[in-house]
Image (cartoon, rainbow, N blue to C red; front, top):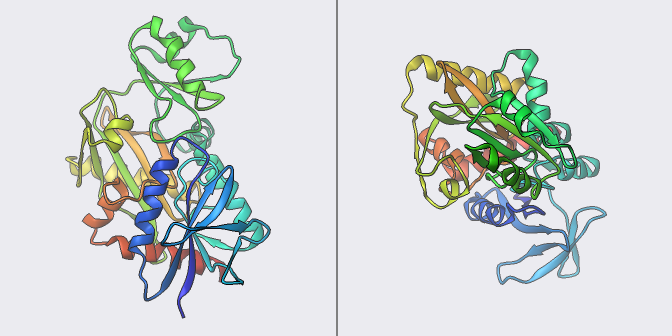
Length: 327
């Protein structure tokens, strides 16, 4: 019997348009012999099921159901395709776990932790996971440019602490540009992280739970046409994404081992995509995404394709893993 799968997409952050594209790809790629997909748009002002004609039907938040033809429809599993809040930061995970509904993303605590760059690095630090030198600011803190520069140097990156798709990220070369970059980051989040610039090969590593085992996908090398891997580089084609990456065997083994270690230390499930830069031959972690882009052009689906895993198989596996977790 076909399982009813709610594909949640949209969200409350600047990433909602990307999420809608990811969710549509999941919907279009589902194995129709196994699953019946439902597009569920999650926005601040409405949660709705959108049918093929674009008609909207409200979701009952009490049990995450929808009335169709005077019949209540419930879901066997939720495929989470929301980038940013509330899909990637633990809120939707907690909601579905309270309702005892299977979902494809990691658990509530893991989602909240990995969405917070500062907290993630703090948890991983005792395990020897290398990362850039960093300086933290909360909204309202006194901005001491000299102290910041003494800690992280120039150039440096100013980032929103809890945001994705490079929203709120700036590369700063001069002291006089620091305050504007900080203001931009605070437009996205009330916490920011300022990191030293790491000059080296940047790679993206997908790790998934595949047929019950943790699997590291082929590595992607990021070569941005811009100053760094910003929004335009990620989504407007202004970068080269080379899979498999042009690494030595030693580099490949090191970053594969670290990516798998991070996935297991944090007790992740479902998809993850983490970014690293090689400095002095060692991979340094930049960040982790637990709801990575899922369009055909996105990095993780490209990596899966190089591993011989089609989009249909990738998404079917995620749903089956989620359903098996509940058994």
